[in-house]
Length: 169
Image (cartoon, rainbow, N blue to C red; front, top):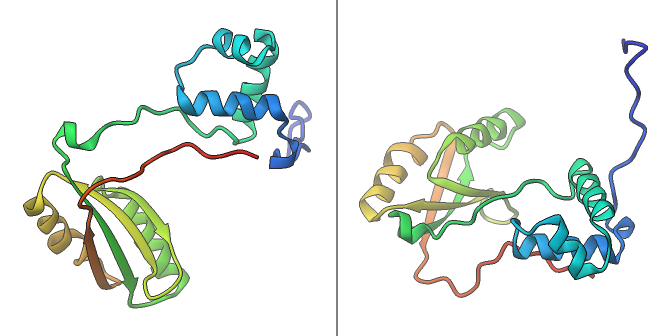
């Protein structure tokens, strides 16, 4: 039961259609450089700093902006091998899926995991230092998981395009 001092939140999350051109311009600038200041954004989109700050805070609170990060070149920190792993599970029930996801989230080698359709159930992006480290991960971690049926590894030879920026409009 809520205490009288607690207010119910009846607001609904922002929809893409509720973001105006100024919001989209702010998002474009933040995707290009998350360290850009509110003052710099306001100068570029011709809006004073206070409304820019309020718009950013609103988009953060509504989950449009989920976090700010530093993108790292994996090859410059000794993680030169990138592998896409397709994984199929033996069992397809809720408990088995939850257990797999929980285990994958705990594996530092896995930088991305997607639930996919088709022959495989999941697609993982794995970053390791070299083939020996990946072999150890594959044999001693991934393949040893309780419900893993089949794993197919595809080794990334080169990156043609890699971006985090979304296109708006």
